[in-house]
Amino acid sequence: MSKIKRLPDAELEIMLLLWQAETAVPRNYFDKALKEEKNWADSTILSLLSRLMEKGFITCSKQGNKNFYTPLVKKEDYYAVENQSFMNKFYHNSLNQFLVSFSQSNPLSDDDIADLHNLLDSLKKGE
Image 1: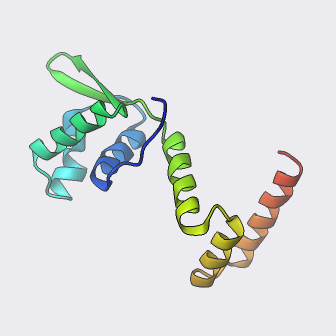
Image 2: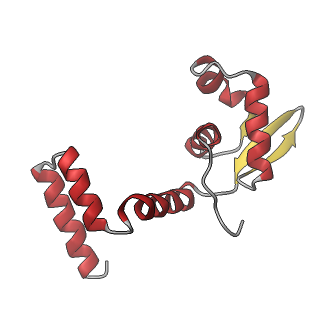
C-alpha cells in the first residue's frame, strides 16, 4: 500500500480491534465489541471487512470453514498519517500552537511538564 488514507470511524473500529488482537482473527471475533456493544448486524461487519480488504488495510485467509482477518497496515503507520493530518489541518504543523491550545483546555501537571522537558532533551541529543 503506497499511501495510507484516513478511514471512516466504523472501519477504524474494525482496525482497532484487529490491532488489539495482534494475530489473525475469525469473523466472530468482532461480535462482542460490535454486535453486542454497538448493535451492528453481521451484514454490517462483513461489509466493513470487505471495504477494508478492497482498500488494502486487511487480508482474509480461509482456515477450515472460517475466514481469518489480518491487518496489512501497522497501527503505528496509520497513527502517523492521522497525527500528521490532524496537526496540518488544525495547527498548520505547529507543535507549539498545538501545545498552547492543548494546555489551555487541559492543564498540564508538573509530571507532564517534566516528561515534556525530558522528551525535548532527548530529541536535542538525537536519541
